[in-house]
Amino acid sequence: MAPVKLYGMTMSWNVTRCVAALEEAGVEYDVVPIDFGAGEHKTPDHLARNPFGQMPVLQDGDFYVWESRAICKYTCRKNKPELLKEGNLKESAMVDVWLEVEAHQYTATMEPIILECLIRPMFGRATDQKIVDDNLVKLKKVLEVYEARLSKCKYLAGDFLSLADLNHVSVTACLAATPYASLFDAYPHVKAWWSGLMSRPSVQKITALKKPYFQNSV
Ligand code: GS8
Image (cartoon, rainbow, N blue to C red; front, side, top):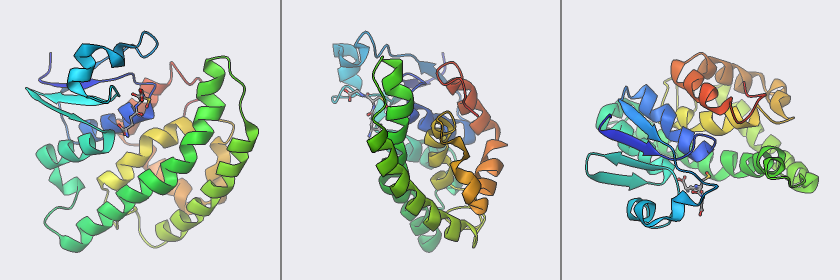
């Protein structure tokens, strides 16, 4: 077994967010499945890894870190700090800006759409179309900002790939399995950015991990 372990189920976009960073940073790791349905995330063993009983958790030797975005930063700091542009005050600030935007604007509006369209139906529950529609309106406004940004630079933080881009991959791969996969068509620069990311082996790995759960995944 590799010294680095990622605990979680790869259906979760929070778990596969970490896969992008681990793959891009060239880390040897194993995914240790946690059975959500059986409540394995609330067992004493998992609560010892993360006292909130959530996944993902990363184990590196005897060190544990949880919260997917903290895991991604730790992974880059340790193995590929150029993905954070640490050492360059302004570039690293731009990476931070777009890491925050991913969490609080992009994923915050995409997540309810994915939950309603993909996750609830898996558990026999109906999609609440009002939640979907409200968040689509919000998401389109967010994507307008992305379109403007990506018409000025190749990647979100500048003309360099960073963790800010990579942290978007997991949730975007899930959106691609919803009926709103063609949403990016109206935003040519966003579409080109996403197509460029999709050619990366790290992104293909995430797509492959999602396939068993989301049949229409990219
Ligand atoms: C969210 C983790 C989370 O909600 C992160 O890691 O980014 N902010 C955290 N994990 C879910 C799995 S589905 O993605 C989870 O563990 N839920 C169980 C629970 O909250 O009890």
